[in-house]
Length: 325
Image (cartoon, rainbow, N blue to C red; front, top):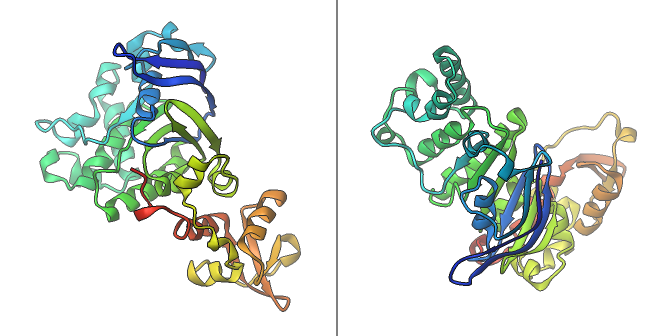
């Protein structure tokens, strides 16, 4: 979907923001860029929609160089959600959302139908919110409208630049869940920038950790937690490793994983309750499954999912406050 080929970005003052960046972002995945402040993640994102021009290298969308696209057509097909909730204060919710569909000359009925559909998707009743002003919305509601506006013209790609970092923790956690649920419905290619490893591990299909403009490691959340390739990656996920000495039963109990009686245990991959988490994660990987039946004395105690284990580990293998500054 999006391919970076040996991309560099050097600013006029000599700052090397991005250095030999090469990666392929798959269609329909949430791909997260993360790293220390100034590592080049936002610059990398802004090169996708040509807000910033690379000094060297090529960026392609669907195997076509982005410089070959008409810049307006390119940007209309890329939604953009910012940290600053950039709704126009003098416009209603409807007017904010319909900007790009109007530019693309959509019929009014089509635009209205799309706005109604998207507001429903993000849990905002259309008849209640469509004519409100931004000042009448909470921060979380405004950011939901920002997401809806980015999706309004049905773009293939969504860029999200630390969209939840200005929100309170409760709103932030809820919006992270909302994005995951929304993605299951819309299947867009989402490039997400954050400095919060907990957020990255929660929402991402794959994570790209950057430092000084370079790629340090790319992998799934499971790969990043299990197989950190450098000291920097270890620092980002935290250096406390004692959580690996916890057992599968600990996750089942403390994460309140779904308890259920398994009628077809022979068709499920199982693990003993007293086995270590590292064994559970390796089993998930080798068997290619995302859940395990937990057994004790040949009796099924319940089911743990891959997300349960990763969440359990995140809470015990994170740096101060779970946020990397």
